Image (tube, rainbow, N blue to C red):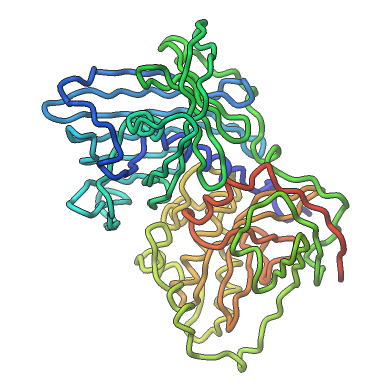
Length: 487
């Protein structure tokens, strides 16, 4: 009998990584005011409406509709994105909406963001208050408030490339901008460079364009703008691209089965078969094609040169536990915006799973087993949110990971999310799991009901969704060779 029904290894990070790049075009980035060539409010030509098609390897998978217009002494912007994504052989629809108001100088005043996919829904809205970005997430009756300090004045110039256009970047020059990503509720840095002008074909016409390229988390995306600063075309990772079109063309149907399974194309073939990976005590691999990742080395992983050795952990006896947690570990008992370990619903669920008299290891095993047995293994395109997973009782490895971490923290066990690669049926797939502290950090995977997780779990990233964006820079670049297995 198979352990799982689905190939539960997420193209979802790759997909959300693309979504993040896609949304950068309308994100909340801030640059120093003196760096931007401002256009007088009275001379900006609006309203403005743009339609674009989204392609994956030249097959249409969705569209974008964007508007920007004057409303009194402000601008009002709206962007709607619709995509159909094939993940694990299942095609899913994903809807993204960003809406808000800008001041005359194009600084952000307020915004609303919604990502909806199937039964999952992620909402956040916020506004600027002096030097803070005030965010609210969750349902209207139970909202979490988050404050993000801002060093610079936030701007939206219609997108990161619009910002570069307005900043008057010269050929072969570059500038870094900071962006706010609502899907991870974090501020990131992005470098934009101006390349040589190019002539491209758009909507049947050949146009001389200004070319800009953005380097975001090691992933490269380029855009071609006309002389007015309108984006005509963009190219991204994994064969994604965007191209300006007419409303009628944008609203045309999407061919069923045209899109490619992201899970499969982002996976890496293994050079040999690994039988019963849960029985391995150690594995050695040659890994290349990646930039430095801070969590590739440490704990059960040893990384030197291109040689990666992963050893299976052992659990210490409960009598050997140090009752006092180190300060740098106890911080991982605290809740975060998407891992709401202090929420009454999360705490109540923990009370149903474990007993107060259980040891830390018993609590951990019971929680991992409960998530394994009660969360339906289903590919999901959304922002992983522990409360939503507990409510919907379904999701892929991301959802399993965030809920497991939230339950562990609520039970008094420090825990974090991890992401990387795992072996299944001849390939290494992108996957997410967790790591918990039982007098030392130990990996665990609720998808497979493993504590500790088997050694084919290759950790590339440790941390929440903002850290996992670093995977964007390695997807499609990693090469693996299994050198040795020890039982």
